[in-house]
Picture (tube, rainbow, N blue to C red):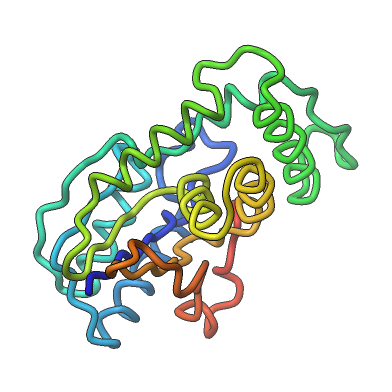
Length: 218
């Protein structure tokens, strides 16, 4: 029986020149996750990550902390949706502090953007349907034997999870609810057996319990 551990990347650098780079918190989250997984005796037989810098840096921090020596497979299918494109088609909310969005305001903006995107309103570089097909393709290419670590983003993890729990239109609605609660370096576990993939845990981040200030969602 195989196991896939889907890891959301560490916190990226929201508002910085290069959003795709991990923040200081993000690097520390990755290290803590690597230490925690190694302490639990987890030894990956394969690793796959998306082509984004935040995926690569998260895996690097995890691997260094855990003492793993594996060459990752880079699969662009595990990339996040283009949040800049999605957010560009809705007006940002008025801010309580001039020019500075609070986490609540950012969340409101993200939800408005993804509601419009999933409903198929507007023209996007990648439609929600195309995004779903891309992630489903990446999942199909991911090995099902051994212990496979997949470092990706919240959108793909939420989509895979929703697909294992729901079908059709319900999958999209569930994706929207799961996508907003994916924690940085949260781990989602699925097992591969005779019936295909089955969800075991979603968004587990107990490696951050002793460091509550490092528990982030954006």
